[in-house]
Image (tube, rainbow, N blue to C red; front, side, top):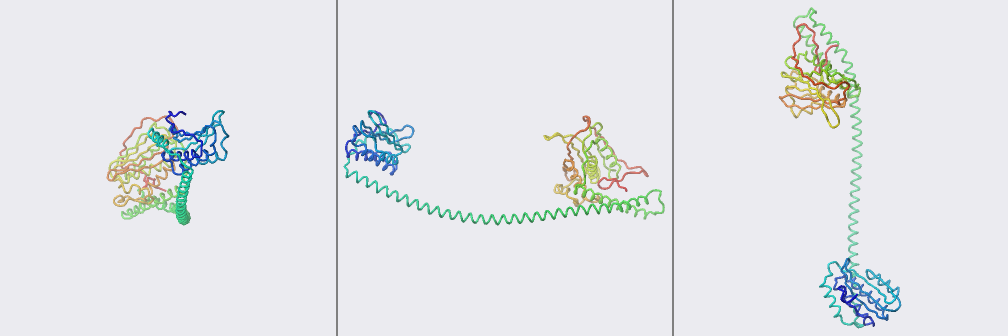
Length: 486
């Protein structure tokens, strides 16, 4: 490399021991100017001193300082000579341990030995090169004594730095040990707390399992009790109701007005008791899983027509307009006819019970949902409605909305819970919305599967309820719409 190369700093001949001393001083001065760490300064100076002594005596030996700023900035010191033995392996090994990179190239006419030490980023600049070049040229020759003193100072500084680092390392180790003790203590405490918590969770889980088992046993005992009591009560109650009706027949003789009134009260009380027994039996069957879903093709036109005719003839419908859909031509649907009849009968009779005047209606339609079509049967009324706070509780067994909702409206509080249970058995849902004083809307949704021709447009007819003619037989229904009788 020529002296005109911008990377070139200084080239000096190395022909004597004094030149080696000067080379060491120049290397340390260059490293200090380039803001290398103290240890790196000493390492570079020591490597130059050792290799300079090893190469001393080689023909044409020179040492060139260069500052490379391309890529990774480095300070390079290049030894070149024309003839002489290769560097000693011990000298090369020592230099390799002291500086970042050492490269030896043996040539036929000239050999090279390059030492490279990284320079901190941001240090290399044209002004830095110029200043460093001038400083190296002004470096005074050094004697052996000066070199030894410089080496001694470097050694003392290195020892002091090493001692300081050792003290810092000791302090850090003590802090780390203290931290480890704290971590271990915290870990032990957390482990104990976790073990205590796990013990509590296991105990709670065991207690919950025991309570769940007892609840299941109690529920099963309740269901068995309802089933047995209901079966045992139905026969005598049916007998009481049947005999009371026989006594009240128009052709019966021997009853004065007071006796007729009392027998009528017996018949009405027996009918109420029969309704309660039937409710208990149905709920018991549903809870015990004894109700079997029998899917078959169902004619909604016939089913709703029969149900509407039975309900229209009840005394409760005398002041209410019932709107039932005409489903002539509606396709057969696949469901359980018995369970669907029970659901609709409960919903319609419940609406009649709480509607003193106005109307009770039923609409049927098909709703398309992302998961398929659903059959929607909606019962609406213009009755007294249900307060918002009570709308979820009406689906609790035996719960009845307190206050004016129950005046003159006997019941068991099982109609809506039973209807929702049956809807879920059919794979559907039952949703109630209501506003106090404005009426109630209950929507039953069931999976829609047809078993017949496509649907025709549905028509809605208004059937005005009429009182039965005197002496004409009329079907009587209990509070959930069941026909009373034996």
